[in-house]
Image (spheres, rainbow, N blue to C red):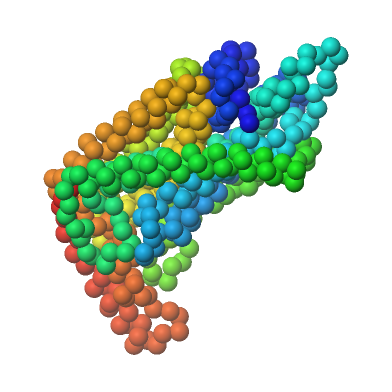
Length: 455
């Protein structure tokens, strides 16, 4: 498998984002973090234009951030159901993103052409240069500069996974407030002592971290198993066709999401809950992805044994997640129907889109696996979890353990809509009038009472 080292001096290379590490032949894994704006390695043909390559990179990040966010929200919806054995919906998205990250990091075939020029073997080359580990290291350094690879790893995998949602579920498990689809509507969690809450916290952490790390390794094994059948993406097709098409698709899709959020289509007097479920998240997702990309680009190489950029964006996104969650669940602000409906949807979009794309599990576990010394990995992982949890205890706990969490306006509206569906175009005038009357009465539903959860 791949070696776990980066270049000895990142300032000599065009890829400054990853941390500088000394070679460690005993380490079997090469981590894959967020990637820098590309410039081709010396052994490959230089890109046609540095500025064009940067535009392609940003466009790939935008496009795949939209796809990754949609994939995460869709998978959360599929895996959060009555009777689900695991009620942390983001768990399977984190596992899936880590699996794809492991595959892309270990794969040697998809980007075999690199920048379009196969490096020729120089006469008198030492036999050491032909070792698989050396070749894999050179290939990984080259493909990290390719815009498509950056889009797939930093864009799709980074936005498919979410560290902030993971830490939110950790806190809710500690506070005995983790949503459970098997509970009847409006019911409360049974009270429990602090020991059970601590066990719930440990369970969520161990499940997410262990399964994500296992998925990362499984993805690498899958890449090796499928090496003979994995195709190679032609460099000429990528540069002349795919890169240019993605520029149009990325910016067009992002602008389309913005327009849908500002001017939603005619809704037949029904609630536009779909904006809170997806559209607002798509508006904010590219911003979070680009913020993570540039923050990691400038900070990850500062401390060789501690990826400062990924740590900073994960903590920052978790703080914003906690603030938005509080605003959504405070009685009189985020829990008022219907005045706060749009505001509640915007907050949900910030949490799912911006925070979900700013923070990442796939890069985080790849860095944990790729650090040269295990003590550095334990320090990095423990610091990320403990600092993020500490902020959520202060931010979310201050509301939960004083006033309690109220039901958000968006949830109240969806529940009212289930019992009082909107009239269709085939309804008679009498039925339409009755539906309108029911809808008006729903508009004055009282806010859900504050709930004080006990540990």
